[in-house]
Amino acid sequence: MTTLRGTIRSTETREAEGYADSVVAAKEAAVAALDLDGFALLQTNAVESKATGETTIKATARSTETREHEASGPNYEAALAAYRNTVPEGWQAQHVWVVAE
Image (cartoon, rainbow, N blue to C red; front, side, top):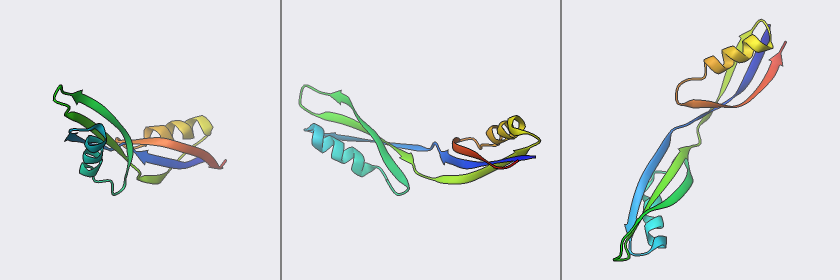
């Protein structure tokens, strides 16, 4: 029997937009509109710039939540398949290692 243990990470994201007369102020507004508790800023993008000078920035943050995950099988291939098949929707495998063979 082979047992695999690893770490899975949430794929949840949040988005917010900020509007201002300068790119810097629009970025600050977009980031301020995000609730970053348990999230990390992933990226900011300018999505619109008007002739009036107003800029729209979209900010995206990704969850930092992780948890342990484990699966077993009669051999490595079966354990790995079980591990992959039991990762919940909205999560992705980050690391996996053999803990028992």
